[in-house]
Image (cartoon, rainbow over all chains, first blue to last red; front, side, top):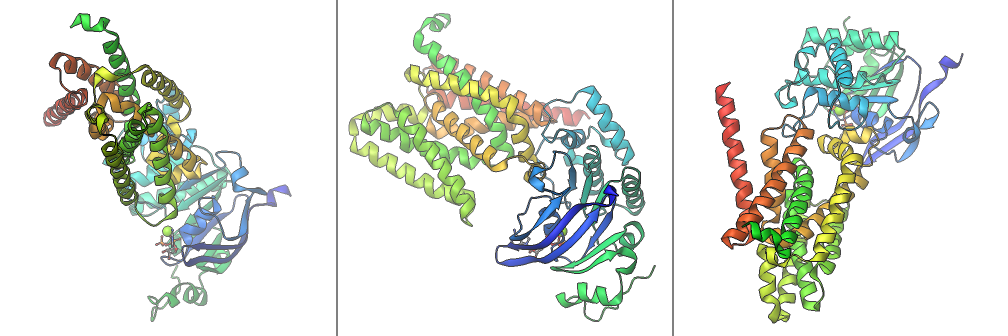
Amino acid sequence: MSEQANILEVNNLNVVLGQNTVLEDINFNLTKGAYLAIVGPNGSGKTTLMKTLIGLVKPNTGDVKMFGANIDDLPPGTISYVPQIKTMDKAFPARAIDLVMSGIQRRWSFKINSHDSDRVATIMHEVGAGDFIYRPLAALSGGELQRVFLARSLIRNPKILLLDEPATGIDLVCELSINKLITEYNQKFGTTVIMITHDWSAAYHHTNYVLLLNRRQVYYGESKTAFTDENLQLTFSHLGHGHGIKFGLKI
Amino acid sequence: MLEALTYPFFQKALTAGLLTGFTGSYYGVFVVQRKISFIGSGLAHAAFGGVALGLLLGIEPLLTAVPFTILVALAIVYLQKHTQLAADALIGVLFALSVALGIIFLAVKTQYTSDAYSYLFGSILTVNDQELIIALLLSLVTVLTFFKLWARWAYSTFDVELAGADKIPIEFDNILLILLISVTIVISIKIVGIILISAYLVIPPASARLISSSFGSMTVISVIIGMLSSMMGIIFSYILDLPSGAIIVITQTMIFFIIVLISLIKKNKK
Ligand SMILES: Nc1ncnc2c1ncn2[C@@H]1O[C@H](COP(=O)(O)OP(=O)(O)OP(=O)(O)O)[C@@H](O)[C@H]1O
Ligand SMILES: [Mg+2]
């Protein structure tokens, strides 16, 4: 069946930044509707891998194909990307609605018409951000901002949704509802999801595939069989901060 | 006062003032939000070297200042990309070199120093046709950029990474912006003077920022303030017979403080 064709192929990827080899020999494929968690310690190359997938970082060797094409040749709006939360530029005059609009326009909007603002309002309600559509971004909390970013990425109905630690700074209840929402998009629309997370339990329960990363790819496969003691030791312990810790996932 | 409007020199100054007021305050919103106001002052000093070269060679200073400034601008962009140095340090180096060259050019050609005064502080008496034509062309190009490039510049000003993920040609856009800012600076020299140009670029957008909730409204308000203050400044400069650059910047500063005051009162009322 053509649905089982790979929509993402990552072949022998190596990325060097400055003097550091940040990613070494990464290989994996995803089919339509897959939900992948990328798990690994700080500095293991998770963000770099995601940026390489979307073409923000160029690999030194190897390549990334989406729908059989190079990333730069994809139709606009195919992917959307929620970056790892960072300190916002609070000096930039923008409201939540302006940021979400950039998800549709792929440009900044000078003016927003009422049809578009209705569309924005609908999606913002869906992610629990309906109360601050017109609030300045500078006046949002970290978790509120994260929800606005999520609305921004969902509004364009991407084929592939990439999320870099979307649960950071979000309270537990909201995290659960966001996880549910992402799962819903994944199942209802067949959106392929790639999520970086530090939450092993969420990865185990919600996703179908896990990539354990520590510069090299320690494990890639079904999420149910990912979190063995051995895999976690390999992924986390030789960075110096994992000694003596008993790994293993209590579920 | 009204009769001044019939003098060709005054008409030229007023037109040039409105045009540079427009382009300066339009590009100024990007200068302010990208936090590159040091580029404004750096390029103004580069322009000084270019003007001095023109005076030395006895040709229209605009003809040397435009390429000279663009060259320095490109050098900044190039060095910023290919060295580890921060942009302000690089600009510090190039800026010192241009000013030093400018001083030497002027020292060699002593009889032109009175002209140099009008370039440093601005003089509405000396705006000529070439400057007017370039200001007009630049304004037309600027209006075009509003339709084609504003939305891209604004996007990458907000966040380079998001813009990059959406395939905005960031580097190309950035070079284009810096080039247009360079030309804006050079043609503003006669009206504003080299010393005050960076203030001229920054004050209208900074004032607009205080009362804008979106980048679109900030752009509009900045342009209104920029054109209004240039017009008022040139009229006052004529009436008071004082250097136009200083009067324009003082007008802008007064508008800035009035807006600060209004926004403070509004805040207290809430
Ligand atoms: N531009 C760069 N130049 C040199 N090294 C870099 C650059 N960007 C990242 N690195 C290095 O690459 C490594 C991987 O960084 P990356 O941001 O991908 O890690 P991460 O797994 O996302 O970590 P975290 O969990 O903290 O978000 C780090 O050691 C980092 O210092
Ligand atoms: Mg990261």
